[in-house]
Length: 110
Image (cartoon, rainbow, N blue to C red; front, side, top):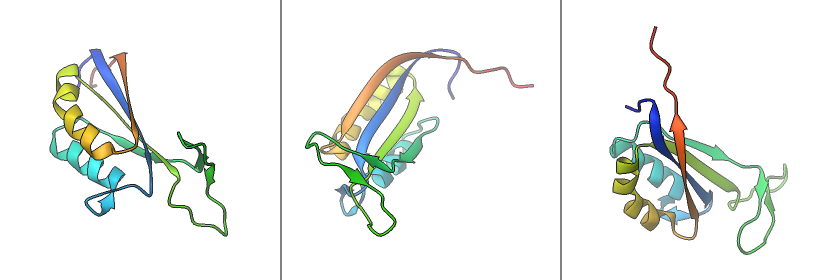
């Protein structure tokens, strides 16, 4: 459980077509984070984007793309991030991981 104070925001940039052991990378990562005790994570699917290869990918009504951008974000203590980072690097493949120092405020429970 997170408390008010310093933390690390982790953002992973992926493609929804990427696979890890036959399953979507984002599913593999989310499952790993859940079982690693991370406080919470969110997966967001983009409608358009491009990556390092500068190829535009977008979701059109008549076209199904398996290369749309996926972003996973979570905020956690530095210790927990350091513990999961090596496995995230393995699972991310050609994706990108961003680490950002942040301060969180957890309001008191009523």
